Image (cartoon, rainbow, N blue to C red; front, top):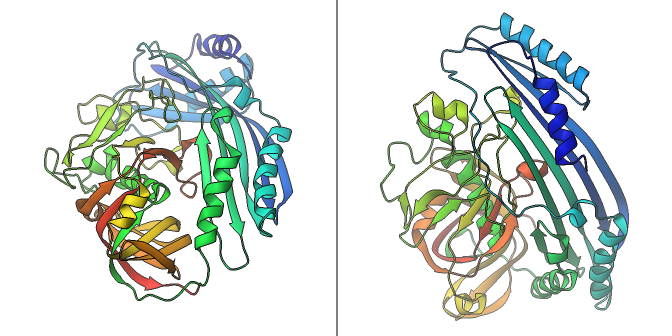
Length: 453
């Protein structure tokens, strides 16, 4: 770890005397360890240490950028000069207003040094717990164990000075019985919160049910979405629906509907990076403080996410959702510390209340072919189970869901206790969407086709 004092001193010294009307430096350092296993054997362990710096210089309404990976004053000053020259050559952007001004940051709990510095031996020990339990049944297992520490420093000429450390630990298990697979994972900002035995047992239970899969026709079903499935839906809502740029440009399902009911009355969704039940952080990539942002309350649309650029051009305030992406990858401000209000229904209660329906473990490779309606399409994976007369009667072959998420959330009948989940297919690093969300039972899920397996 670089540490707050050293990182912020270097950035502050480099910023002093910057040319242009405004200037900003963002530095982000990452230490990540990844251990992968397959066939119950570890086959890859990697350690990543990287540093990214991004500089912005404003001249009038022109903004120049430059990037580098050296944390010392003189090279950063060279980047500032480079960004200044770029700004001088660029056409003015009439929609640019200003970089954000400095504000006090909240105190959050989202960094654990032991997690940030976790070694490969600790990750291997957790994996061994999983492979030993699956071996008792004559099965194999695959999966991943990740530990990560990240520290970000942001300074600008308008008084922003933000140091934001974060940590993350993740463990997943995919047991394979030869007849079917299971899946379970655990995620936290503290590695000590991850219990390998619990992950293994949940994955094994799913695998025990997932064998001799039968065909069922596509169509409309009552369905129980596991929390991982719900996290996948929330990720797409965040990118396409709760995105302030999409909202202002009329591309969001919320555009023109703020204050209206857009989902079932039992749906409440918010974003809050200051809540330690999620992967907490005190500020965004512009140094703007994080805070709780209501998005849907009792089914009523009440908010979207903004960064400073998107907010200032329409006369609003940033909600602290700048993501630090370069211009070529910029999709707008996206809330990525989501919460969905749960309930007290257990999974067994959801199953017993279902005359005929499906229980879904997770989705694979989802995408959104209709962003305005937030249509989710993707195939089920690692256990799609048929329920009849309140009991699981067997596994079925995977199906493809294709449905508008707001429409899906119109028919939520039961909600269970929430858990921290993450969408692992949408992007890289801790910029992924994390969701503290519940399993749900819905009255109508639309499956448009089957799969070959």
